[in-house]
Image (cartoon, rainbow, N blue to C red; front, top):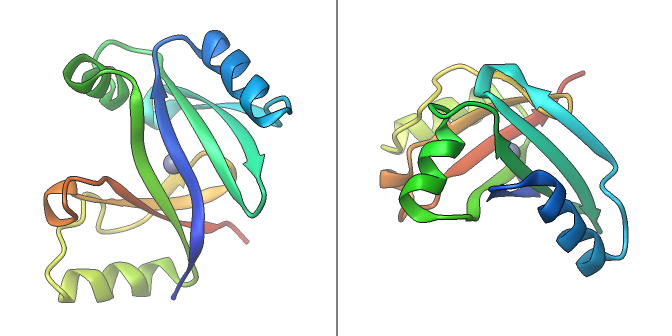
Amino acid sequence: VIKKIEHIGIAVQHLEDAEKIFSALLEQLPYKREEVASENVLTSFFKVGETKMELLKSLSPDSAIAKFIEKRGQGIHHIALDVEGIEDEIKRLVEKGFELIHLSPKDGADNKRIAFLHPKSTCSVLIELCEEKK
Ligand code: ZN
């Protein structure tokens, strides 16, 4: 079950600069920063109503975020959908013909289990499925 847009991930070059911009825009400070070692990124989160914005800064030149910025520049990197029963959702999407980058969920930032869909099966939009760890 897809519940809502959980967050929008934005690839940024400089985290501090981006935090200042989004703090001014949203009139709030980020509520947390978190390193995701498996992805080699440092993340910073803002709450926007029911949804969040996740700033993503690469910590290594060969991370997915570094490659994204190199190719396309800063900007919207992914849209994350909050799901209930992530294994079942992965199965459902595979059956529908979507290409999944992760066939089983892995640990993501913000206490989530996550899986990405390949953007070539979703109109070039990288989609993340995420479910709060219980
Ligand atoms: Zn995300």
